[in-house]
Amino acid sequence: DITDQRTLESEREDLLTQKDLLLKEMRHRIANSLQLIASILLLKAESVESKEGRAHFEDAHERILSIATIQQQLDPVGRGEDIHVAKYLTALCKSLVRSMIGGRKPISVRVVAGPGMVASDTAVSIGLLTTELVINAIKHAFPSGQEGAIVVAYDATTSGWVLSIEDDGIGQSEDVKDGPRGLGTSIIGALANQLQAMIRTESSPDGTKVSIVHATI
Image 1 (cartoon, rainbow, N blue to C red):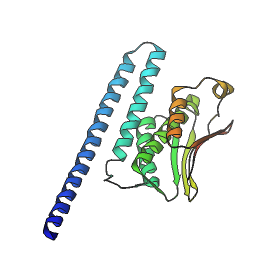
Image 2: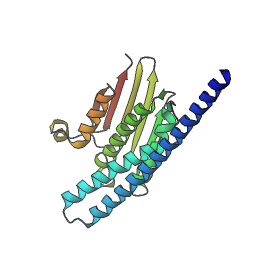
Image 3: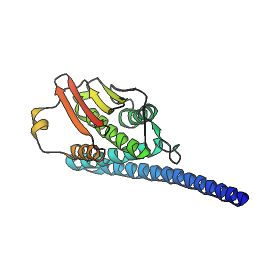
Image 4: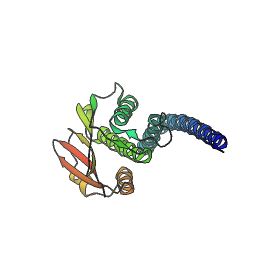
């Protein structure tokens, strides 16, 4: 009986290991496919004469590329493993800088994160929020090639955690504050709602700070 039990446990471990490998391979293939789609959209954007149409293609390109980046950062994760948020955000923001900024804009992105771990599904939502907010800052906070800095911060305590993205750009105009919700705002709201977190926004001519506040129940 003991031998049979050990055999069953060994087979179970082998199956779980195979499952992990398949999941990692799937993530890798999904990330590659998304990058291919993003490249096609960018090529299409360059061939569109309409400024508004080009902006829509570029926007779709950025969001698809961001999802591909998040998939790549989760590749090493095995079954039941939690994610080190600091390492995850640092790697994610480095990828965002390469894809979104490169050497084209004088904008820096810095990560300030304390210790803390989250489940992989929470990490995906945190990654999407970070990506969306960083992209928003890059696109809107520094017009006309203005130099600037973006700080991504994460702080976890026993009572919860706070993710914040702060820039030293021009701040939000009254039109943006009072105007209709755009796609980016809707995405941020939906992700925060999924995490059961609150959104706090502070903006002035010296910059904008958006905080995602999650309280442990």
